[in-house]
Image (cartoon, rainbow, N blue to C red; front, top):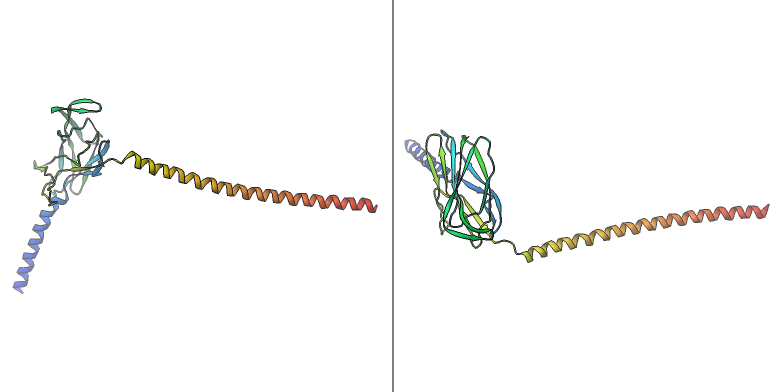
Length: 237
């Protein structure tokens, strides 16, 4: 019995350690949605869960990429939180369709609010234009707790797909849909619907006309019988 008790104790301790190590990986800061089209604009939310039982999240600091700077960045106010957007000079100017870009948003900080135990908060940002020829953007994020602890979510994904302890929020970029393909789909949809509607309408109209003509024919027939009957009476008289 003592052996079984010891084995159960060891198993319970190992399970607790495993769960404790797994929780932070499950509760990291993420971007939602996690994908957007290259060359376009998008709105994302930095989703921040609070994975501590004895502290609240009181500050979020998101770093924006400067190797692929974003010309337009705006934030949506979050009740109870103040926000500070910092712009920095780029190492070298970047040519865009809107002109030469020498500065861009390098950091956004939200603080003053509180994310309690078992809660999460979303911080929405509109951004663009997203770079082309790039398959992802990484946004290293620092999460500060009321006790002073700072968790740095800044690790880039590994090439072999292996998990990292503190993954940075990642926005995957997909090639934009080709205009020809989009137009073809739209054209197919536009053509298909009108083809069906007139046919159904014409059928209903034809049926209505046939019934109307049929009714008119019956009425004329009845009138003819009445006229013929009157004529016979006059001849008899």
